[in-house]
Length: 302
Image 1: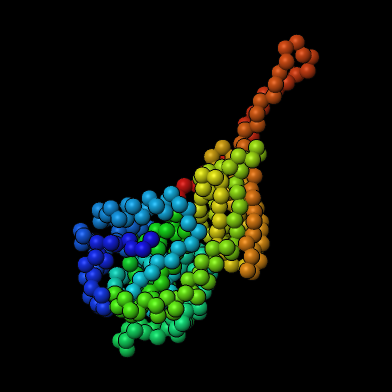
Image 2: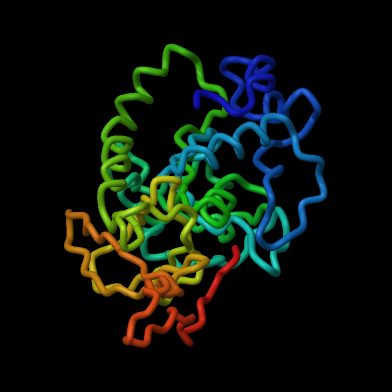
């Protein structure tokens, strides 16, 4: 997506490094504060641009997302908000259940960048960033950001890449920015092929859409696609995945993620009810219809 805010981009000024011109949409709303928030109720009316992006990322279940910004040079990862955030001031980190993955993803970008990993601030009165990465809330907390929304609501891991001290750098600098970020972008995209992926299906090999999956010890879950597909970026290690779906027994599977590889784990779920047996008239053999199993099914809502 070239720009989420085409109206703001239209009125921005090439070479303008500071200020707020171009930040807001035509209605004067900062779109990166307009998404539903996990920690704070969204009070702003949803903007057309926000609604369009939400529809897009719901229809296409992305594995990984990078959000490119200007105004600093750092890779910032979730959470951007926290339960006790003091807005627009420095705060404590707000840690996700997948903090190991997010720190790794941010580091992949930073250490493959020409100089982001140095963590040098844009000016002497600005904050520096060790290794060129930061937790979003530790930098400054914000509510309604796209980064947290993608992760919590859509199961997509997103990292924000601030790639320029200048908000709207001159066009003649584009080649330099490409050279500075090319290796980082390619390395980050490659992380989508690490972790675990597979198909969730029933005993007749039919895909189960919208099954809910959760990695053991990580309470933020995700869902299968309409074709029963799932995927999750993970670091190397041993894991347990739990799958629930209405009408099926809960399934738990152990798996191992090996460095630089992806684990392929297809999961077959058993129906809660056995099909009734066929009875034949005048048969001397007694037949009993199948009865519901006593195992309860856990349906998890997000």
